[in-house]
Image (tube, rainbow, N blue to C red; front, side, top):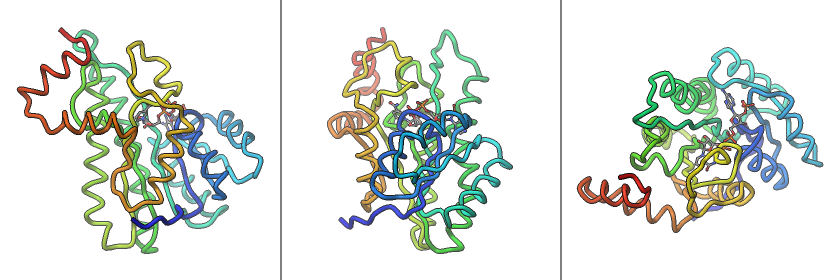
Length: 255
Ligand SMILES: NC(=O)c1ccc[n+]([C@@H]2O[C@H](COP(=O)([O-])OP(=O)(O)OC[C@H]3O[C@@H](n4cnc5c(N)ncnc54)[C@H](OP(=O)(O)O)[C@@H]3O)[C@@H](O)[C@H]2O)c1
């Protein structure tokens, strides 16, 4: 397996906290110039200030806003040069259980997780294709493998991100642009701090950042971790529905 350093500058979306923040700090420590985006400028500046090298640069941007995305890509490339690697990490989760299921919640989750990702792709992918170089990594989740209880919208959105990455990779492979998908298990972040259920194999964001960074260097399409949890979920993914449903009900305590 080849191990090539992710090309700088690296753009990380959703980088004002959580996994994105940890990845930005990790990449800067590894010597990359890093552009970070999220909606909160104040939080982005606080992340940049944590990095003593001065290699983290804040570019506030709402990834669901087409004009803002276009402006931000232009501003990053103006200041740091052509974006070498983009980790499209901005995403969110809200429970959508049967007894509290609203189309508006589904729409909000898809607007960020799927359409926000697509918005950035629409802007950046043609530039990378024209340059015949570039590296895109879409952050999905192990929750995108199969439907999980109380998380219908999140699972559907993350399954969509995996499908987006897979479909585009087939076309991008011959055009000099690398496409990967990132499927983390549970990572301790402000997003998961809200969860009231036990989170197996919960890991720290710094650990997730290291695994993502190593994965970005590899030729693997899918960067999935932690291994043991991923193996369990992939086994469940291969099960027929008649076996999957009783097993997932038991595992999650749903009657
Ligand atoms: N934590 C986990 O266990 C876990 C597991 C698997 C996958 N993931 C995925 O990993 C990614 C990061 O998760 P996390 O746990 O680090 O989440 P988080 O702590 O909630 O951080 C989300 C980041 O996205 C930004 N963001 C939200 N809306 C945005 C928008 N419209 N435009 C640009 N940025 C926006 C937030 O900043 P602002 O609010 O300032 O915009 C924040 O920086 C998500 O895609 C998530 O689904 C997480």
